[in-house]
Image (cartoon, rainbow, N blue to C red; front, side, top):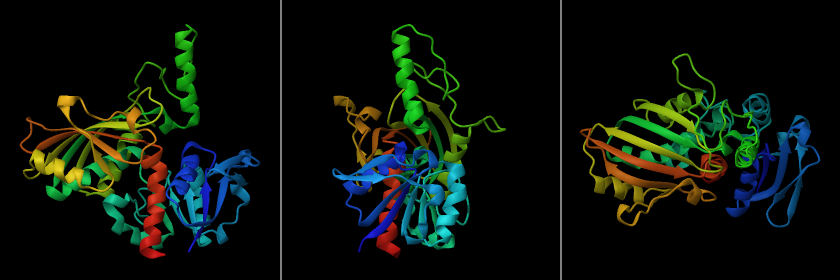
Length: 337
C-alpha cells in the first residue's frame, strides 16, 4: 500500500532533504506533493533521479486527500497550517518547535520513545525534536537503560545549516570576504561567524540561558525522563553541516566503561568510532550526508562517582531533522496505519 505525502517547506534545506530521504529509503508513496509559501509557487524540486515536482502554494493546498504531511516551514507557519491539515485527516509530522512542548502532542525519536507515538491520535500531530536534542537522546537512551542518568552537562558545536540556507550563504560569503580583506557585516548572526564561534543560538531567556538551551533541557526530559537534570550551552560554529556535542553524564548507579561501550555499539541508530591509539573519532565533516549518530571519545569521568564523557556527532539536516521525520512516518505506518 502506498501513501499520499505532502512535504511542506519543500524548497528549504530540510524540505529538500526530506524528499531525498523518501527516495533513499523507498518510502511507500503513491504520490508526493511539494508545498511551500506563496513566494515559491512555480519553482521546481527534484524527487529522485527523474521526477520533478512543481511547488504548490500552502495557502491554497487541500490536505483532505493527503495521508501524511511532513512539515518544515517555520514555527509560525506550522502553528497556523498544521492544525488545519490535521483537522482534514492528514497526520502531521512537524519539524518546527511550535508543538514540541504541547502535552497532547507526542515528541518522538523512534530509537528512544517509539511507544509514545500512540498519542498521535490526540491531535493528529507528531512533533520532531530539536536537532541537538535528537542526537543526544539517541546516545543517552542505551546508557539510561543500564543505569539511571541523574544529570547531563552538554556543550554543543552547531553548524550554520541549522539556521537555514541564508546562514550557510553568510558563512561562505564572510569567509571569502575575510580572505580578500573586505568588510564583513553580520546579518543572520549577532557576530561574524567566519573564523569565529558564537555562544548564542535563538533568543535569550530571563535566566540568561538561550531558547535553544532551554529546548534541550525540556525536550530531553519529555522524551527520555523528566527526572534528568540537563545543563546546556549551545554554540554556533563555522561549519556548514553537522552538529557535535561534548556530553558529560552523571549516573545514579555504577556503570563500567565496557558496559557503556557495549550498550552504545548495540543500540539502534548509533555507530561507535573510538580508538585513541589510532586517533579514530568522528567530526562533523565525516558525519555530513550520513544518517547515524556517531559516538566517540567514550571515557570515564574521574571527578564523579559514576560518570562518563562522550563526543556525539550527527548530520543535523538528516538525523537531526529530515531523517527523523521520515523515520517517525515509517514507525507510524508500521505500528498504526
